[in-house]
Amino acid sequence: MAEAKNVTFDSIMRDLKARKFAPVYYLHGEESYYIDKICDYVAEHALAPEERDFNQTILFGSDVTASQVADAARRYPMMAERQVVIVKEAQNIKQTDALQKYFEKPMASTILVICHKNGKVDGRKLSYVKAIQQAGVLFESQKLKDYKLPEFIEQYLRQRDVSIDPKSTQLIAEAIGADLSRLTSELDKLLITLPKDDRRVTPQTVEDQIGVSKDFNSFELKDAIINRNIFKANQIINYFDKNPKAGSVYSCLPLLFSYFQNLMIAYYAPNRNSQEDVAAWLGMKSPWGAKDYMTGMRNYSGVKVMQIIGKLRETDAKSKGLDNPNTPPGELMKELIFYILH
Image (tube, rainbow, N blue to C red; front, side, top):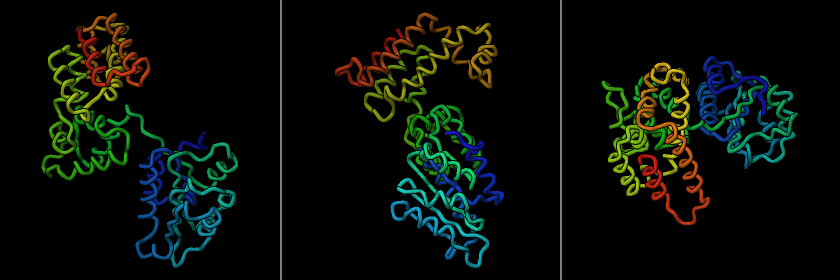
């Protein structure tokens, strides 16, 4: 569903911090993290603490009708410039006609925040959507793609004056995944443990505080495969077999597929003997990022890479139950690693 204008989490937060409040914020989508952050900011900053008792109302969609929400939003503030009405679990409101009428003529002295989680506003109700867009801000909170998690982690820590190396970033991303609420909670716990005179997150920090082994993880497995270190790769696979939470075929496949897919592309670089040219060919910001691909081209032929990609696809299908009646994930992983390295 197209937005009327390019509304992002950052643009909304910039306006809120500048105290440029819209009459309506309709926050919807699968990612609850951004919805909660916007809602919490309005709740904490739109009104002075002494104004909240009479001018801040929190409603729940399962307990109210659209008419009751509209009535609450039409009230005038008491001894304050504005009032705030927050509707949580708004996806549970069944009939929305009364809300649409409110959107068509919202109160200038009300900030209405509607939190519609676990799905999007019905895009087929075009008049309803247009009314929201005309009234204020319509924001879809989308799940963050896995490949964007490292950037999110780095930015989150940088904003708190903490540095992190690429390996630690990858370890955290793989261990926790794209649940941003859980991810930021774990990062906050980690921040508390850092000494004031050393604001760095290292692999050892991650192992100590999040419980991810700095030596036996998907990141290290990929590195062992790139360098064709058979002993280290088998060590890690055996560790995974005894500690399923540390790694599995499901977490390793996307990482390995992405690497070998890019390695195949690297073979077509106009000058594949130059690390700088390969990095540019792969669209990397830094030549340093192409180091693994230079190593991979020394250790794997183009034909072998094509065969590995085919094997990765086959393993992915088998891990999902296709043409695989009873082979457990651990055995699939061992078979895949043996195929890659031999």
